[in-house]
Length: 407
Image (cartoon, rainbow, N blue to C red; front, side, top):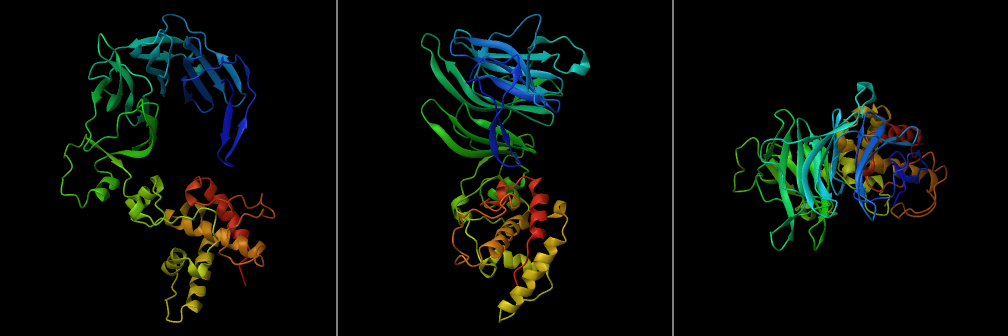
């Protein structure tokens, strides 16, 4: 394919874009990386007939492609490699080369930053240390002063070649410019390639992959052993974690079924638990729960108000709910704690239901009706607060403050 798409994360909508300039040929297994604040550089790939070694830069504002003319020595054509922007250089590692061999070379491309006035050129880097074996389909993520390589697919044997899939972690230290193996404190995920890995803060999130036979759908965190996730998961374990401060622990989210009534567990849940707060979920299909039946909402209302629970219940519930809604109406969106987002989103949807669907039946029904003025209430059909972006919270709070409270 040679099409170009963008996902707008404000409205979660895909659009195919028409770009111009030096359009890249259709390809797969290329690699790309963003640089500056508006550009993307893409290198290599496979067009169905041959391996490629070309470099294209896309300006995401003008949507113009430019093929970069590079002088001097060029890396062998390849696909299934990684391309990682590191300050002013694009680092390319590994991949499957022309004719089929698996590569283990590291190249740096200069000349991408216009302000530097450098002529584009490739340099092969040969770094000391325990470097990775040749591979393709691996990932490299950047965090702090190091790059982390995980997994990938290579070959083994001599007279008879066979596929080898990896699950090792190898670090490229930017300070010392050396490769080194990263020991882990527990069992690693099974070997795989063609997975995704993203750096979130000091943590790395691994999803999926393929091992030559099976396609995976599992989710793993790679974290330091001082991380609250590790302390929580292993606090009751009889086996102590290694005391090496450089080692890491790779922890699978395997306890979600009994820790979460919905059996749903993800990064936000882990973050919430590491901070010692409770995270709630909206059920699939957007059930609109009455405020008197929303226990987390009520508990939050009492915790943020001076109202004391009474035996009669309902009257004090109403007072506490009014106090919570007034709290949100006077809140700064930048100061809304994570633990309040679930109750806030549900109450936002509840108030919209009161305003527009009060006579349409029981409030606990699933809502699939089109909403009057739906453009004004863009979060009504979100069924889980984890779908919110950070910049959605001010918009959500603004819309919430505009809603009429029930009599």
